[in-house]
Length: 142
Image (tube, rainbow, N blue to C red; front, side, top):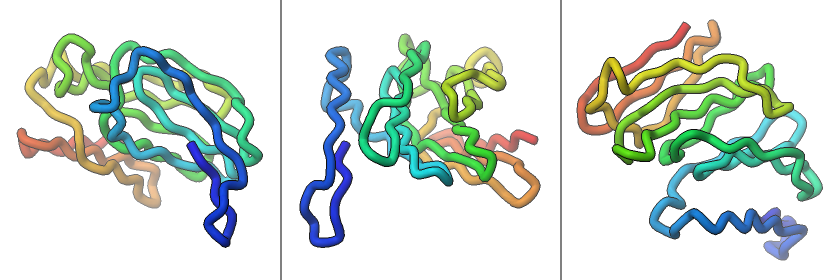
């Protein structure tokens, strides 16, 4: 992860050194909270401070292939894909900015064919919208 200066130079760089991840899995877009902490994930969710230092990391029981999203309360929402059926959403999780699970919503037992891959969104009532890719299903979480 790089932080760039306005002139395009590198302000700082953070290397996650995650040996389990292959370049093929580097598709999930990260997010940032209102304090400038950056979050990105593969099979682990990372929190990096505004100045490029690791805040924490949290191992996930699967992979992240879809974009992360952060709400106004600094809650990070992650669609975790099943590590045995890579394109199937296993669970949707909410994690606070301290790296603690707030809730976990299992998905794959009910909709095993659903695929992540599209950008989630949050509305003004804090409903979370998670579209799927090939199955044309749309999850709404209140």
